[in-house]
Image (cartoon, rainbow, N blue to C red; front, side):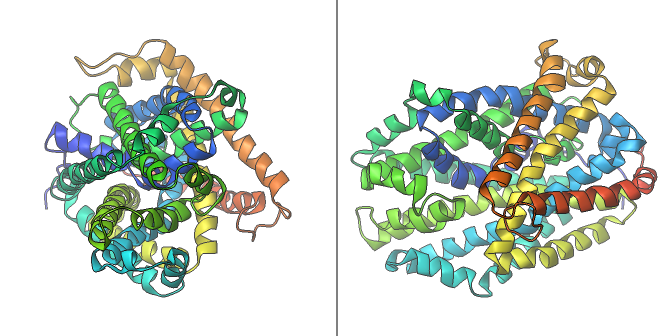
Length: 493
């Protein structure tokens, strides 16, 4: 087998793969409920602001680091910040991999509900809570979790061009077509325009609520792929001439455009079928959680559509297949990051894929079988993405912010050039935002959880500190080994 490094074969394939990282379950199951719980159109203003203050700067940083070092997070951190900080790269890789362990379960949920839809079972049921509890209380999630892992592992086994690029050329356009079909149906419902108006109408009073701003920043941190390390890995397989700033902006804008389109779909449908009662259900009722809105509340709405069981089934099938495709495209990038990290520590390629798949199945099994365990992991490692963003900014600062901007960001002829303002954003604004977010979540844990210090509580400061702390201590102990084992880029890279 040739040691020559693979590359994305086309700019389109590369951009679609970057979109595959960014566009995931968060665009579908989290965005709309967070909008409903934070003032509707008022939320969109800080959400757009933080797109430019958090997401785009970090996405550009990841693409530039990936383009320069062409390594997974450990090797990139060693190259940019020095060998003493290999542990930071390991933590970045761990966070994305830990999310993989339960994210594959989410992919399985999407496929299972697609099958519920096409079989007519979803439209026939009148108790969606019982359907959901019956599914999650069985062994079915474990098998769908396994199927998702096997599918993703096969894609990365096929390589960058024939696996990741080819799959995203199918998944992302198909996803966009399905979302467009659902959007057409949603906006043609009687009363849909009222929902769209509510979605886009801001209220000045909400803009003085700190929670709206913090939730907008959180949404940007969680659903654009910024700081995960996934875009960094894909950028390492792009050709040197590929744009950094333009592709980074396109990725962020495309991700948020999908979120807006899903918002239009959901709020148009909610107002057409339930009016403000639906908003209340998204704020504090059955649609007030990621799982509740996706697998309980929205299926109930699908059953209320005019047209009978056939229409209900078609609408639901398209929605859940789109959900599964969005989650799958992101999950594939997590598998690639983990497998590449093992490979760069000296493991053969096929062995690294096999180990990643086995770990994903075994360590993801508890999340497939226990919703409490799933919620714990989602809480701990979802918040870990904020730390990832801080570590990415730290790598840039260690490299030299101005040098980084001139040599790495503004390195492609014809690309959009970043001015000195980028230096301030990446070295001051990003750390400030990250620290505020971490502090806010820690504060909420202390005041809202009775035994916030208990490491065995599902949601607690204790469980976050225990899991993060254990990982960081272990990585610090083997920091020298990590730095020395990480492969150096070969001349063909």
